Figure 1 (cartoon, rainbow, N blue to C red):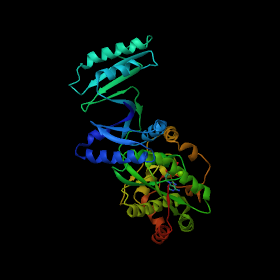
Figure 2 (cartoon, rainbow, N blue to C red):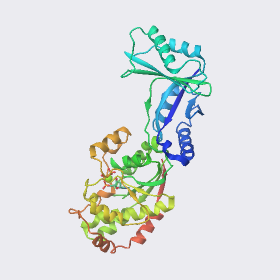
Figure 3 (spheres, rainbow, N blue to C red):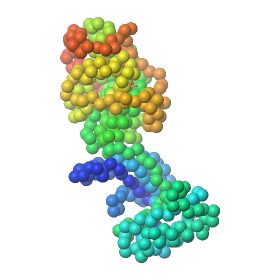
Length: 384
Ligand code: ATP
Ligand code: MG
């Protein structure tokens, strides 16, 4: 008899022929998340089991597994060889801290001598004997004791289900490039898209000396805070000062932000090629600022045509974004004061509904190909 952690996965069941691949990736991600822990994994009739860990590590292991995309829930369970007397003895010693309960028996092993319904009643009576104030309630119970008698000669007894993050296993959708600023939105956007299976490479634009070393450090901290969900992140740092100065010098000020964002996307497309990323991800949100009107987003979209731009937060209210930021523990860092390169050379009257042809005409005043090549040469990589 031993304590184990039983893992359940959700949407993978929908994947038909690819299921094996999804499971393999999930299993690797699970192992990676607890690789510094002393524990074993095995599959037992359609489930994953974590076992043979030091009991003091149980909370840490659970905390890590809760953040693995693809897992929907987990339970701590007792695993024992299937044996009627052993199950009854174990149940007889349970102390249950609740007012009501039910027992649910799943008898996958049809050679087990007692039928599910009868066994539920019997075990229920045993528990009541030992917990005199406890009532059986088949519906609206406070606690459920599950006895799962598997085909392979093993029985699992458990009660609590702990929710995990769900989603699709990280990496099963390929790789994406997250434009990571120091704000609230972009870390949440990265989390949301990674939850659908896209693993993340980061890209940050900085404008030293207009933005400080601290602002850069903040972005690195945010990337590190995402690693429990996203795994290790390769973060590109792109110098953006010269590009901004050139736009400022050559283009009409009202187009400053629009053109800046288009050049960010052109650089992003190059980094995508370099990294074999299939999409660009931003924390943009409709109507939040002048650069996030439909017209502004359109002019950003057409700055490059190789890669789709995913904006998982496009329709979120700020308060809902903040809620997720708090959940994933990036909020407190995101609200620390910082300067973003987007706030440098900010015009008084940015164009709110830019016309694409006008933007392009304005942008042509720049030698942006050369500027972009130069920025690409000066990329710095940080492993978070
Ligand atoms: P956030 O809270 O994520 O900073 P925001 O509301 O401040 O977003 P913007 O500054 O317009 O909005 O940025 C929109 C998106 O553009 C960000 O969510 C991010 O994906 C990207 N972005 C902005 N600044 C940078 C930067 N310096 N480096 C990389 N990406 C950036
Ligand atoms: Mg920002």
